[in-house]
Amino acid sequence: MEFGDLLSQGPLSGTRPPRWIPLCSNRLKTLAFLRLLVATPPRWMLFGPGGVHGRLNDAMTLESHTLHDTLGARIDGLGLGQPIDNALFVEILAQFRRHALLLFPAQDLTDEQQIVFSERFGPLEITKTGSDGAGTRQVRLTNIGPDGALLPSDHRQNLIGRANRLWHADSSFKPVPAGPSILSAREVPAHGGNTEFINMRAVYAALPAGLKAKVEDRVAVHDFAHSRAQVNTGLMTDAERAEVPPVRQALVLNHGPELGRSLYIGSHVSHIEGLCAADSDRLIDSLMGFATQAQFIYSHRWQRHDLVMWDNRCVIHRGTPYGDDRERRCLVRTTVAGTAPTLLER
Ligand SMILES: O=C(O)CCC(=O)C(=O)O
Ligand SMILES: [Fe+2]
Image (tube, rainbow, N blue to C red; front, top):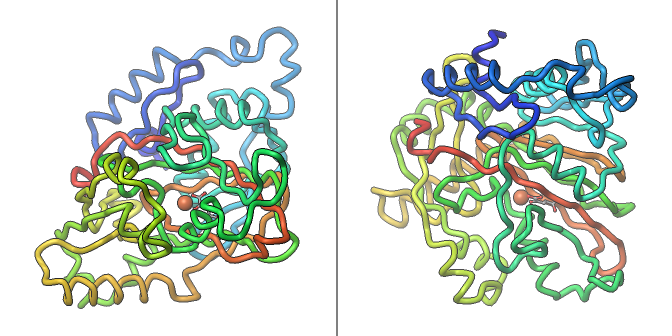
């Protein structure tokens, strides 16, 4: 892998988090490289004398273990709550770029540590109104209330949990949708509650020619109210709806010659522009039917303190059912803001 390609996937600053850099702009690659030259402090400046905290993460070449044919790798032995120097961060980025999803087991992180790690990848999204964590840089996906007790099964938070069981890319309903999401398992149920992932670049590569022709140059409209209405029409207030009006997104994203193209679709898509309602529904169903075939799915069985991160620009995901009326589950997500509209990523 070329250094320039690596840079095109993400930021490298040790002190000030640069922006999540879109994949295919040479100008931005150059800017990122200049930023690296200016902002990369030597290792000793990051760790200080003795390098005590650095030792755990003072890595060599990272070893990873593939999770699935089409995406995902597990990386053991790092402590993401500890400082990560630039050399190691570059390796993490390279693995992330290669696998689109990374699992780091045994990361017992505080909220603040998760934020510090996540901000290495760029500024974080602020959680929107109506979610647990609104106004902060984290969202809690949980069936546990503030008093520590389980919430009733029909509680709004559990309904939101059910909406997350539809395949989606995080924040695809925003004008500039998210880059990576970083999800930390704080409490996990004994049965069920997996999160499942699909690499949409692998899906696009495998699309039959007829479907490929149908998605070429298309624009899809993503509407948060549309996906929420599939679970419960009363799930959003008027104020929440006004905060996230429908947006236009490219249906196919181009991640350059090495990575290829990705199908950008999921439950937030209300329709595809330029088609009548019936044709639009049919095309969405065909694409989702093709994408969600068993051979494309990596189903992650959570262990407590797993940290999983994926790139929303090429991965869709969904939660799976569990006994939310009797088992505790708490996942905490940080989401790296995207920097470019998808219509520029075609
Ligand atoms: O509950 C889950 O497994 C899915 C959560 C989810 O959609 C997210 O963290 O973005
Ligand atoms: Fe999600």
